[in-house]
Image 1 (cartoon, one colour):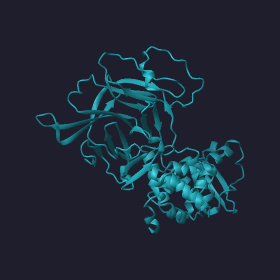
Image 2 (cartoon, chains in turn brown, cyan):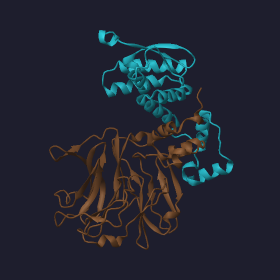
Image 3 (cartoon, chains in turn purple, blue):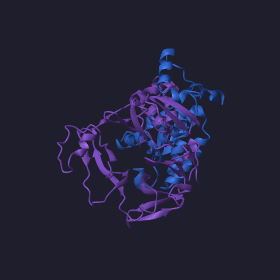
Image 4 (tube, rainbow over the protein chains, first blue to last red):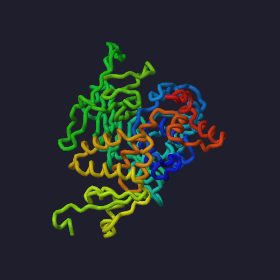
Length: 292
Length: 163
C-alpha cells in the first residue's frame, strides 16, 4: 500500500485543490510537514465558499469575531494587521482595510498577504492623467476596482502602478453601485437605470459564467422606515438579447448578501447551508436568516 | 497494420509484479504516458509499467474500458466515475492516485483526488492522521506554532476524533 505521507508535491497540491472549505484546508495543512507544502507555497486557489461572517466589534485592537457556518461556531481571530484600522468584508478572500492615516490595504487573513493600494490622495487626479506603465507585471493580471466618494465613481488599480486609474464617466449621473468580473470583463451597475427607485439595494455578481443581479426590497412603513419582510429578486443577463431574465430557481446554488457585496456558492449543503436560498445580513438584527 | 484492416489494436501492459494485461489501444490511450509510447512506436511488444502493481493496474484497466465505452457525454462519464470509485476501499485510493499520476490520466486523477478530499471534509487533524496512517512528523513546538497561526479553526474540533 502506498504511503500517504510520501505523496509527491503535485499530488498533495491536487488533493488540496479539491478541498473547498478554508477550515478543511487548514486542517489538511496541519497533518504533516509534506502536506503543509501547499499552504507554505501559498498555492491554494480558494474557491467561492460560504463566507465567514465578520461581526462588528467596536474595539481598536486586532481582534475580530467571525461566525463560521461550516463549523457552526463563533471564532475569534487575532489579526495584528487590523489594529487601529477600519475593515470591510470583500471578495475572493480579501478584506479591505483603511487606516487613520488614510492608507488603504488589502489583507488575506489566510495567507497574511497584505498589499498596499495607492493612497486616497491619488484619487484626486483628473481622469485623463496618464501614468507610466509599470516595469513588470507584478500582479499576474489581477486588479482591484473600487467605488468611492459621494459621486460613487469607479477607479481601477493594477499592481505595479502608483495610483488609481479613474474610469471616465459616460453620463453625468452615472453613480456606480456594484461591479462583477467575468472572464476578461468588468461589469458595473449604475444608478441611472429605471430600477433604482424601485428597489432598496442592487447587487451584481458572477456565477458559473452568468452575470446575476440581486435586488433587495424591504417593505417600509408610512414614515419610510423599513419594516417587515425582505424580498429578493434575481435576474440573469441574457448576453445575446441584452436583457435581464428573472431567475426563479437557483438550483444547487445559494447567494449570500450583505451591504458590501454578495457571493454565490455552489453546493452549499457541504457548508451546513441550504441550496436554492438567499442568505442575508439584516442591518438592525446582526444575524443571518435563510429564505427558500 | 491492424488498425488499417478494421480490427481493433490490442496492447499488452505489464505491471511491476509481472502480470500481463491485454487492453484495447483505444481505451489505453486515455493514459497520456501510454499514448506517447504508441505515438513514438514503442508499443509493439509488451509495455512495462514499472510504477503500477497488478491489482491497481487491473482496476485502472476496468476504468479505461468502462469510460471509453461511454460516448462524449460528460454527465454520464461523471456518474460512471462516481460509481467506479464508490466501491473502492480507502487504502487503494492512494495506489490509484499514484497510478493515475504515473499514467498521466487527468480525469481519473481528478476524480480520485476529489474523493480523497471528500473523506477529509469536516474532520480533525488527528482523525485524518489515523485514517491515512500518517505519522505526525512535527516537533511539539512546531505543531503548537502551526495551530497557533490559525487558532480559530482548530479550537473545539478534536471531538470528532473517534467518528
